[in-house]
Image 1 (cartoon, rainbow over the protein chains, first blue to last red):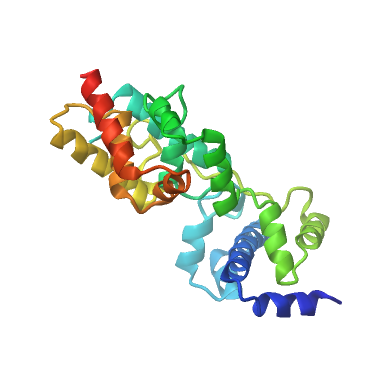
Image 2: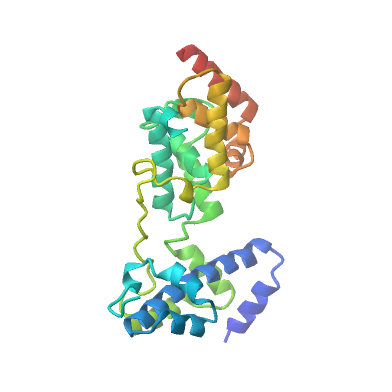
Length: 78
Length: 193
């Protein structure tokens, strides 16, 4: 579809504002997706270590970022 | 330092915090301080800014244009930007809602935004370096003028002295001569004293 051309157009845009704004939006989407998926994993009883491994980050990092959120604190305990 | 803020100056800072929340921005920046200073219900310098030709609604629009509403709101501007790299946010959203229910992509409730710094001041952590600098400069201005308290005028002076933030840019774009506004602010302090 036109997606590839859109991508090419953005990648080749001479206006940095367009491209950089896309980076920001993508980062926001990434953050949201991470929250959704981490919460889901916690609900399904995954440990922080398992989540960290799947995300290819450190357990401390993922814990620090997500453990404070009520929806990520679940039945499973620490 | 904050115990030296007048009731009004505290109200300005609170207004800036509220503006950040309303706009869904990550940090309180100089632009939010400016918005609060423009609010006649909070700030004694609102009139001064108005006389200098700064229009609150226009400033708000300019902030919207430059920053979007955004970090937490995930609005149309993000959708548009994602479209520019071939990502259909609506499609992503509907996929997620299929699996995780309505509102899956909405922001999680903010995590204890009132942690009671300075009695509900939600300070330091959420202020940009520049906004902090403005408040420091406000204190310095007060000291230099041998004023015991920091008022809205001092915050404006701090904003003008900082001179590099988005607020300063917005003022310049509104056609304000920063040096002139500084003089007028000092005059109004003098006449009030």
